[in-house]
Length: 202
Image 1 (cartoon, rainbow, N blue to C red):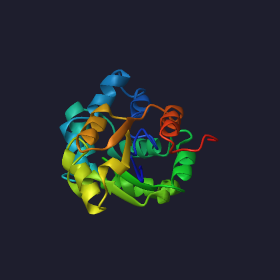
Image 2 (image 1 turned 60 degrees about the vertical axis):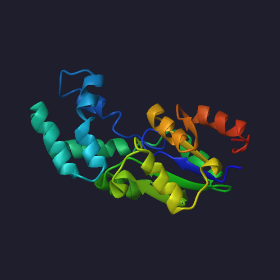
Image 3 (image 1 turned 180 degrees about the vertical axis):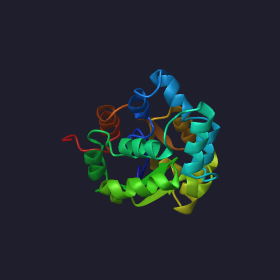
């Protein structure tokens, strides 16, 4: 029996870095995919694990790409992106919170999480929230999932994990979690109703 539902944050509940490339496109000749790649890679991994701070992360990007752009401008664009909620997800969370314990497991940076907490009150629906910068590992690693499960004494067979990343879903399944790859709210509703976890009225 499912008792716990574990959610990713970025691109599931709110926008993450995806979308910032469109805002930056006016400044550069790179296409969207190339711009988004600039923000990925080892530098982002170090930020998410708490090994560097946001300033160091953005300064490295600006220097490497030789951008004539202000770091504070990038910070502003990132935060504006985080304000976007994924449609219908707060409604789904509210319904699920009536019958299940909700957990948040997110690869995120401390400075970003502080802003997101202040901007999205619906995050209070979660029983507990876990972030990669606190744990020192991301969802690419099994130990990230084991940390949440062990700290809360959860049986993985009683949990469902929801994430937009197929790679993260595979790691979760390796530790015994049932997992859904998030596409959009409607697809998630269908999956949850099929499992008998969500009201059909939604």
